[in-house]
Length: 125
Image 1 (tube, rainbow, N blue to C red):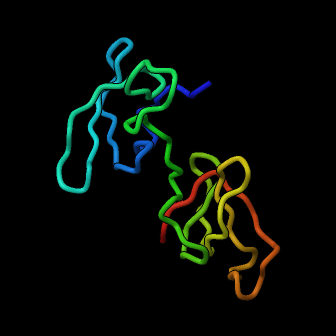
Image 2: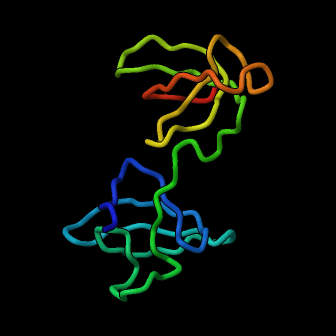
């Protein structure tokens, strides 16, 4: 079962095109896809499917991790809770629940390959 589309998340198509979701009107998701040259308007169902066919379509939407463009040891700011104090660190990947991890004590992959902490929020520094 596919998750419903969420306007606050990032998506791409099954074939790898960048996708934007602009609005949800009733049972229709309004968006556009970018093929590398031009944006094309497209509509999807509430689960991000381009068609109602039983098999996937190349334009079906796939959720993209907000940390997809982060690299191991990127400098980041992390925090827990909505107003938690921000801490500096080096990105260590994501855990099995999709939450960002940071190396302990300002270490990097080179100096600490095991000790990480998980946080709720993470942005590049």
